[in-house]
Amino acid sequence: MSSPDDADLDFTGLAEPKSPPPRVRETPTPAEEEEALIGASALGKEGFHLIAARRAASAPGGAPATQVVLVVDDDLPTGELAARVLRRAGYQAA
Image (spheres, rainbow, N blue to C red):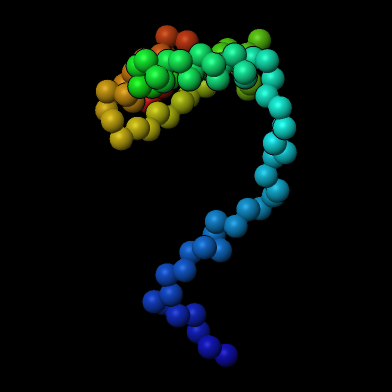
């Protein structure tokens, strides 16, 4: 029986999907169509478009104050901005 090759750096097996991907809808919803039109316009004028998260009727897993969100970004000001927005929404952000 041969031992595994320590020099083998093929990690592609780790990226194989464990479950099938979600089904893609053929047609977007009216809300998605509206966001796309707004986004295309903003992208052309400003060079970027941001879709802010919308708050659900109730936070999954309890009140926001009981939830901790780890913000990771390679751009420090962007990470700080995201953490500030989360804190204002009542979450604990680190």
